[in-house]
Image 1 (spheres, one colour):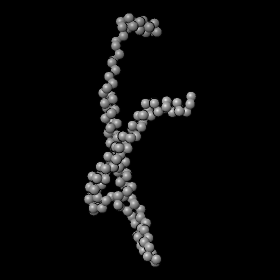
Image 2 (cartoon, helix red, strand yellow; image 1 turned 60 degrees about the vertical axis):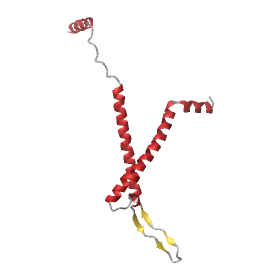
Image 3 (tube, rainbow, N blue to C red; image 1 turned 135 degrees about the horizontal axis):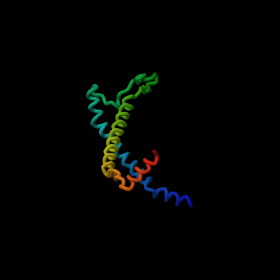
Image 4 (cartoon, rainbow, N blue to C red; image 1 turned 60 degrees about the horizontal axis):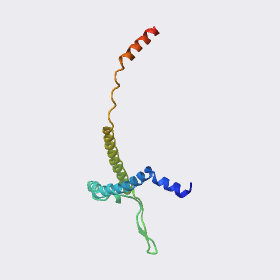
Length: 137
């Protein structure tokens, strides 16, 4: 079997197509959550903490200076605010995906009919069991 035909067979499988759709939807969903975090949640947190944007939070190790030649030397800083914002993005995305999966599983369980209770054995079977039990004694 040629490589091209194997590749066509691989792509034609439902799993690959489902995965591709999931990746595209996941990327779009990530953008929605990032917009929510950047536009709504972080400004509220920034307002509560003094008005600075969370992504701008940093610890300056050495401030920007001008050297003897007049060239500006950039500051050296640990930018922990961007990390905090990314962690909040991740937690929100994970929580919303958890809610969707939980709702999906609940709907899936509702679709599956409950198993019927096993029917009572026939009278002949009960009699045969009694004979078997009495012979064991």
